[in-house]
Image 1 (cartoon, rainbow, N blue to C red):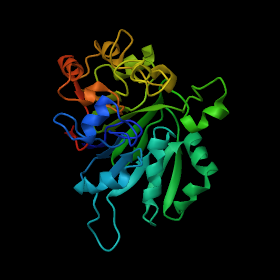
Image 2: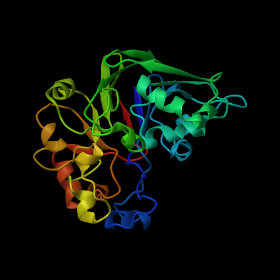
Image 3: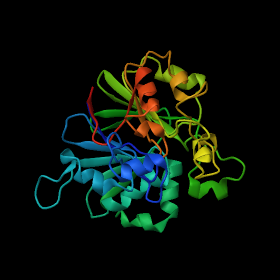
Image 4: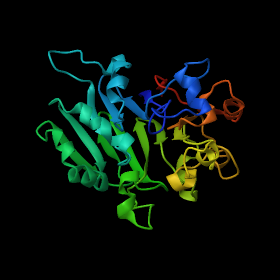
Amino acid sequence: MHIVVLGSAAGGGHPQWNCHTEASQRAWQELPGAARRTQASIAVSANGHDWLLVNASPDLRQQILATPVLWPSEGLRHSPIKAVLLSSGEIDHITGLLSLRERQPFSLYASQGVLDVLSENSIFDALNPEFVQRHAFSLKQPLSLLGLQVTPYAVPGKVPLFMESRAGADLAGPADTTLGLEIRCGERSFHYLPGCAAMTDALRQRLRGASLVFFDGTLWRDDELIAAGVSPKSGQRMGHMSIDGADGSIAALTDLEIARKVFIHINTTNPVLNALSPEYAAVAARGWEVGYDGMEIVL
């Protein structure tokens, strides 16, 4: 099974278009240890030819240009992208669908709730149903596609920002609002969780002993945006666990015997984006990797 990290940053990428914090300044200037990153998405293939996209970021065209295995190679119109699967309805997960509107056949998979969001916005009618068939999946039910078996499951999270006004006091939303994915090919599998607000006993058991886990690395600390003076929101208010601290992801996954752990969906303010920082060194010392655009893994 082939995995390519198309994008590793949180919404807005790194540097975010209007961000002038220290971390973003380093990326603007392309200083050592400060690689630029696009918004989080991965591509997965069982055979190296037919590819599943997990989430379609606003940076998708740029990501395809940077990934030769996703280039057209047959006839006048062709794409190795045969399916797209959405783990949520966040803007940075769905906007890239609009870059796939050129009458190219592929299948689109999402929860019924996310498909309803797409149906409510007529701009997504640009995906001609004669070429793009939409399929709803059910939680905890394995889905077979392109030689892969994908099992979506609910994790603690939050409704997309643009739906908060509808959610009222219940920002967590329905069970299918924020999903983790187990993707399997034969005996090998991995988990992809770009967003997770808290660790639960059920999630710990699901991840225990995994070969590979991509996990929410949005913020280093819960008050990061507040301390930086760029937002009044905490990580918890945004629906994300932080990396550091007693309730952080490093502590939560420490004793689960996971062979390989990679942070994904990293916010532009997060100091781990500086590979020369003490925070980056601390992450590596605890057995974690910081995901980067173009990262390739074969299981």
